[in-house]
Image (cartoon, rainbow, N blue to C red):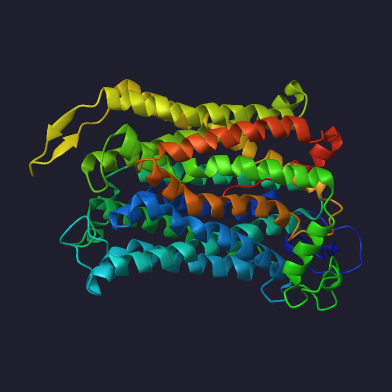
Length: 521
């Protein structure tokens, strides 16, 4: 671990990242840590839009539901590669602007490029020859630009979030209280960004703020998505600009011991961060392997819901087809449900430690909420059947028979399910990361790579679900329920294994790890 240099004045103290062998460093003022943590709101705003609106949107561009999940393979691949690489090189960056800020700036610029490609994919595709005369026609050029933007956005999010968390660790100067406070603030801004993003996605008339967004190739749903991303990138760029101007870093010195620290002996010396990660795996103990197993099963349970929740609202609950107004209404209601989910998640995150004490440990808490997840995913079948049993139809102006929105009871039940699932999600975003910081303490990975092993247990299941989720649903009729039922089964299994296999950490170990948290990217 590098030693931070003591300050020579108040402002230098706030941002000192130079490495000298002097006295203990002083933590940065809280206001500057708040500024850095606020970037999480900008990142999560865009991520909330990505989760709630992009699966329906890519189907609007003509990609069949069966294959829409394959596009999400970019998430785990970018998480597998970009996050550890960005962490490794930001630990060692000797730019005159500091270690973390160059990566934060690069990530923000990449987000802006990605948002432009996603928002204008339909327009670019049409200008290059896509046929928009039939709604059922796939627009290959638009899909190509959408996928390119989608992949860039995922990589940019990983490039932003890792260095931001590391920046907070640097500014905390090893003070455990400051670290816990900084990461709590980071989690708070993540919740704020989620709530704002899902709220924007649930409002169907936001495009009226940007009249130019609606074009011949970009209908109301597309224009609304485009407008949401305009707001997202404006928010992110403002927050990043404030951090770059207000929070300074002193460049890493060339004599820093971090160049030699935590370098593991590995044949993969050409890519040091991958070598370090492989070296960390070779030294994992049984508790960490059990944690990886439970985490892997847990995320196999979560990903079908993460990918298809708003599509489920539009397709099964509202009975619509992609491109129909009733489907769009269902998707917007799904975004509203995700906003409620984020509110519950934020409140529940404050109760993790008290509940773990009441239940006799975090592994029991994690096991219990996995059963809640299993029941919740199984409830999607009941809500869908109830919606279908009371479905009413009307004939539209074009003579096409369309479903009417479900009853208030069915809609309320679906929104309640979204809300309840915020409880297990809060635990999933905190407990595994805290346990990983304890179980892998002897793995040999540095700060930039300490959670790389756990990240693999998240991205590999996502690759699996992204690859088989759509075809699985297609094999059973083309809906979302088969993947949800599969998720319920894996959630129950992970709940049992969490209680049976995981060791119970000591309270003092959990206190030290309380600063660690994560999320889905």
